[in-house]
Length: 224
Length: 269
Image (cartoon, rainbow over all chains, first blue to last red; front, side, top):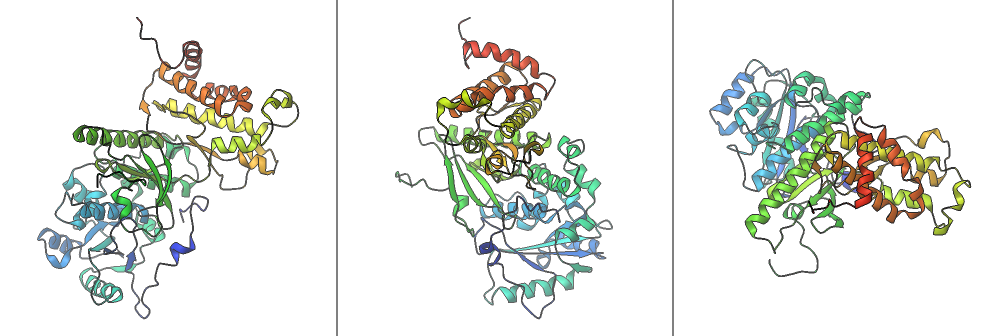
């Protein structure tokens, strides 16, 4: 919805490489394609609405339960797919380069959403918060493909995830994300209040695109 | 690894998987620009700016300079973007590795647009054809250039290398033509679009009239040598610049001093 057709480069060669999800399985898990990372990586993402066990999930993260190695992101702090994927890409890249600042690639996703280097602050704002997180983005990053094949791996991840997260799965699209975004919070976290570029922009879709760019830039410039 | 090769080795980031092979767009003294798929925006491209290590510099100094320059360019872009100056947004960077990825700007450089407009006419024609044809679309572009440079300077940034190659003409989403001109010719299309300023490799933050005037002077000289046939129209850039922010008239006043002495300030007392 926020895509500007004028600047979008649509290339059939690019899109045709995206496989359809395996038939017969209805799932809201999506394999996310990123560029400029090793081909062995597999990234999966999903969005859960009305999550009822946020406290339990956060407790698993804190106790470093290996069964719960996911990036849990409070969906109200995400403003678009590209915004989320910028953090995911950064985490994978940082991991490949051996420069992780946090215990693993999943926690790195959450910390990467921050515009400063304070990791605890990143978890608190973008991570899962007991009693507060209602809608949850889940990202699973695997550094190697499954020997049984991608379809099987995808199915396994989804089966485990739906047993662990108590919520209503929806597609991880810009439309679904926009429904749960807390714009006031996002504006505050990314220091967008008073940014002249947003005041100058009247068109609402255009404005969201600019907010997305500002957030991504803030993340890219973290610590500068 | 250290042995010289005819083709420059791409940065490591471009050797990792990608659906499209990166394309080398330009190659300057300091760095290279590649067009490559955006890391996280499907079906979109980005520009990767890479500053390779300089073998003639001490490695520690080299690493520090590269890092500082990438960071400073990213910071300037961030500042401009926030302030509403039309510049590409930053997508990702690894200053230590010497690269940053920025938004890919569609369209042609202003240089190409102006040259297409001017067409194949012989050079000595310039004085004659002033009354021959309607130049509104070109003048309109010049005005938009003045506004863009004015917005940049108002923000407290001087570009350092303003040329018509360092401004892009991003096509308008609709097929609108300059100033409701209604002239749907190919020619008018060549100079249509938003002016987006690029390449902030030499940019710095400055509010001084002197620095701003030198910025304009560099543009004036570059314009005159790139587009001699349109030189007589250059004043339109300055006219719209004058209206674009409060301190602009002072800068233009200073520009006259700079013209008298050239870009460099005298170092003699």
